[in-house]
Length: 468
Image (cartoon, rainbow, N blue to C red; front, top):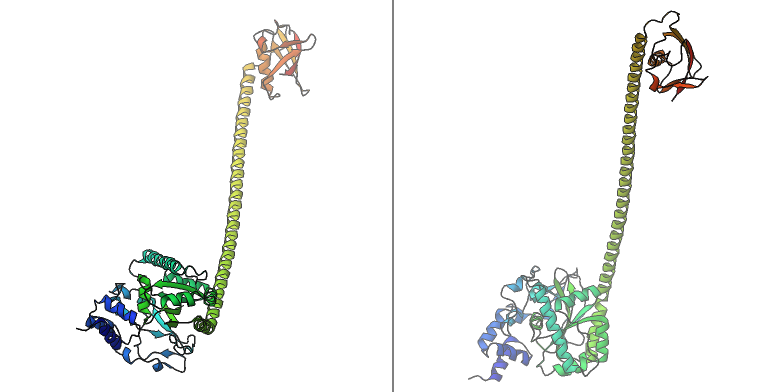
């Protein structure tokens, strides 16, 4: 019966993995079934992986770098992992350890690592689809996935502080999921430093205490990177270890966002590393990528300026439009006011005209009535009598100085005198009284029934008209 050590050695020889702890985890996840573990590991790997060699990469004249050990493929969407590739316990999840990769065309032009940790691709950087890394939108994962990833990140920071909190210097790990950290690095124009924490690896404590918590490393990371950490025991950390093919621990990498929901793998560091070596690697990454970051910052600033300019132009346009609309409203209101005033003036003119016509009509009617009245009263007077003892001579003086005289029978009523005055048409009113001066006597309407003789006006009388 093959013992554990033999199975471990045989698995390492077949898979080419050097990290015994990683191999042990894979075998434990498959119940130490050697054939099942090897089958699970190799079935998800490209058949040409064993023949792959970094030296097989090439750079053409256009600086477009390709890996010959991986087939070319189009960019995948975020849902690829949903078809059975979601996070599962160790062992099964290792089926996605080998992922198709492509090269960022015309990218950073990084040189091979002088220290020997990790690998560089001449002329470019490896890129992974975010969907293949397991960080796509999925099918309705949304905010739940982001919240879960942030919870795992905060749990890792808490555990890291617990185990290594005695050192006041620690990297500024962000308390959010990988995708949010990646977005933060994009918005801050920095690279993303990824640390995958293997709690059970014997080299982990020394690496965390002496390298990650080194004053120089911490200062360099906090100044130049957004730092994200995750435990391989957590869902997101395990996905990242599989996707980045972490074969040795301690493991760290430098990535940056790329186009079309992909990430560019700029550098990975595997195994024990001194602070000086880590700083040298990170320094070189920063130097080689500085032009890209500066360009991105300039382009973003240009986009912001263009957006601000468009917003200012839109604001100016809206202000001008509102001013035009206000002027148009004012013009319409003024026009409506003028029309209202004109309509009101026309209404008043018509009313005045109608009133004038009505007054003229009424005046004409009154005049016609007076004419008829004068005619009727003149006819009622009859013929003027001849002089005689029973005839009274009456002289009437009008306010305008005009004098009129006539003879009446002595028994004629004073009412007849009023009818006579009215028939002459000299007065414009019927409100008047007949009076005598010496002595002053008023022969008003109350005396109309008296005869001339009884009133003392016979044989002759001189009467004045007094307007009431």
